Amino acid sequence: MKRIITLLLLFVMAWGARAQETYQFASRDTCDLYLDIFRPVLGTSTTFQGQEKPTILHVFGGGFVMGKRSDGFVRNWVKLLNEEGYTVVTMDYRLGMKGYKMGKGLSGAYKSSDRFLLAQTVGVEDVFAAVSYLIDNRDSLSIDTDNLVLSGSSAGAIITLAAVRDLANGHTGVLPQDFRFKGAMSFAGAIISTSGAPQFESAPCPVLLMHGTEDQAVAYKKFVSAGRGIWGSDYLADQWAKKGWTYCIYRFKGRTHDVAAYHLIQWPIEKQFLEQNVILGHKRTVDATVQDDSLPSNWGQVTLDTIYR
Image (cartoon, rainbow, N blue to C red):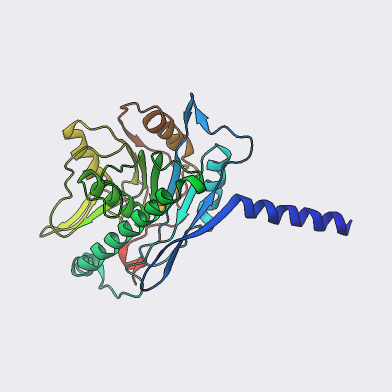
């Protein structure tokens, strides 16, 4: 019996080693940055209607002060994606607000706007560095970098939307000038700016926006003073609608920042977006309000003061 248990444990350990691969993709002054790759479960379909499913590059949340690339609360979501035939990459990025003391309330946030912008900027730099690593090693890693979807939660969603904006404006950094994501998914995201509302010079890639209408941590609409602030999902969708661009926004009525952790329970929404907008390339726009009292509210009302106290 002990021999059987030992063999089973060795099998599980060996399977885990195959399922997760870890690589260093950058070295910064303050830290080294790594990414993990989680492959589809053996035997699952990696295509949809004859088209390859994209790889999902996910950026974790945590207010730019905390979090890890493979946090426990996204592991079940990654497992689900693997079971659905998707490869998932989770990555590190520099936490630009870690150790920073912010004043209270919106006035404190306004005075800290330059630091928030820096956190967003270095996060985008690190995303582009991770993508550059994947491009340089696409053959050995067996990842199609022309078929990447960027995903982010909370601070990671802020980085995601800023990266999408930069690419739409031709600001590719270390990436090839013609690089674009096949799609992006934002769980309670926004864009930080200190020079007025974010501008898009061309249509962004297909974007899925999910946001709570009562979110007081990451603005659902916008928090702005003298051109400095944060522009949320509602604002971005409104601007894209005026330009006739396609997007999908799900407005969770009465929900707070909990939507940042809705990856798993809202998989049907993500699945439809990935299959229809990304894989099949349909110009499909959705603007939906979701009112569902059964949805969890595990965090209560999260504010800037509770994050940066």
